[in-house]
Each structure stands twice: as C-alpha cells, then as structure tokens.
Image (cartoon, rainbow, N blue to C red; front, side):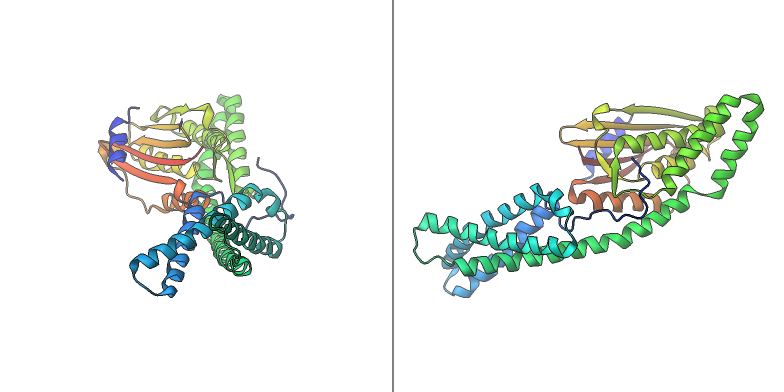
Length: 346
C-alpha cells in the first residue's frame, strides 16, 4: 500500500499481569517529560521577571536584575529537574506526602545551589542563602502541587477512556459474529476454529484484565494481530492485511489498548461498507529518537462512512497524557486512502 500522498499531506500539516488488589507505586511528578521541563523553566523565569520589577529603575536596570536572578534560578531549576528525573524510581516507592516533601526539600537545595554559583562568580560575602533556600522551596512546592493536580486530573480521564474501550471491545455483535464464525468452522476446519477461539480469548483477556498506564508497542501490535485474525475469518478475501513492523520499535511505550480501536475503525469504515473489501496496513518505523506508527486503509470511492470520532479522540487524549508534547496524532484522507499517523518517543 503506497502512502506517499498521505505523507506529503502530513508534512503540510504543521505483560499484562494479574495483580488486582495491590496498589501500584505512582510517581506524582515525572520531570523526565519534555513538557514538564519546558513549563518548569518558563514558570521560574516568569517569576524571576516579575521579581525583578520590584527594584524600580529603567528597562536596562530591570534587564540587569533579571539576568542576575536568572543566573541563580535557572541552574537551580535545571538541577532540580535532573535530580528528580534521575531518582524517579526511588521517589515512586515513597508515599505521596513523602514525595511532595522530598520535592520541596530538593527545591531548597536547588536554591542554595544557585545562590552558591552566584556567590562564586561575584565573590560576595553576604550571599542570601536563607532567602534562596526559601525561594527554591516555595517555587518547587508550586511545581509539585501543579504536577499533583495534573496527576489527579489524569485519573478520571483514564477511567472514562477505560470504560469507552471496554464498550468498544465487548460489542455484542462482534462477539456473536466471532462465535458464529467459529461454529461454522468446527466441522469444516477444526484447527482454524481453534485458532479463532484462541485469538478471541486473547483479545478479551487484554480487554478485561486491568492494565498498567503504559505497555510496549510490541504488545499492542500483537493484540491488533489477534483482532485482525478474527476479522479475517469473517471477511475472508475482502480483508487484505499488510504488516510493516520495524523490530526496533517494539520497546516504545504506548497507552494500553490504543492500537486495536484504530484497526477496528479501519475494518468498520473500510471493509464493511465495500463489496470488494479494503486494504489495511499497519506499520511502525523508528526515525532517530521517534517511533512513527501508521494505520492505513482504503475506503469505498474515497468516502468512508462518517463516524463520531470517539475512538480517535480517546487515543489522542491518552497519547498526550502519557507523552505530553512529545506525542503527535494526525489523520488524513487522500484519494481513497485514510491514514492515522502517530509519533511517540522511541
């Protein structure tokens, strides 16, 4: 399946385990995400810019004070981000109040560190050590509080997404069609009927068993294979599937149950309404530090049956929750080819 036109269109657009009861350690502030780093630096620099206004004087004096304050604040901020990122596994083992306390203490240490750098450069004998520690603790407390609120805001969104996934996965007509296909094959081809039931069992096991926040891309590809294998029995030659999986992309972290709704959409809007069927292609490719994931399908006469976009919105939101600004989600319909194109960190 050739998707060169789709690619040009995009360029134009700017293991599953059974541990049900034991709560999983949860990291409140993950400083390793690019979006968190950018927002933290911008927040601290904005506070410094406002603080520099209190000295009075003209614009040049304000610029000088801002440079002085930034020279102390930015190294401390970056130090706080580096330390919290490198020690996030240790922080995740602590309870939520302890994590917040550690973040505030690290902020005080970062403030002292920044003050020490300024004292070293200016050779001053009256460095504001206490004020720097208090300012660092206060700024880090605000950052930690914002990240805690972000974490709490993620929970209802993930719960709603989870319910939507389960409803999409366990549609009665899909189950009945699959079982009817298996019944029809029992006498004609018992091995094929057994394989279909195994695929169906694997699909429902992934849908019903509680999942972690993220899984590997290889797990999601395997789940999509099970789903398309079931639909292949139902549609036969009308469903033509092509896989182009880069083995280097298997370890990329993605939201649980994010790929199956997209291939389901490809079948629903590409294969079902067309008497001649459709081509469905799933591809992954590693490009530097980015993994590109594509789900492409042909649509009847270039026009697919319009949907509500619930599955796509679900996937888009969960990609952004997991990877923030590092995740990309785009769609395009060009000359009878519909494609969903995603990017996640490798």
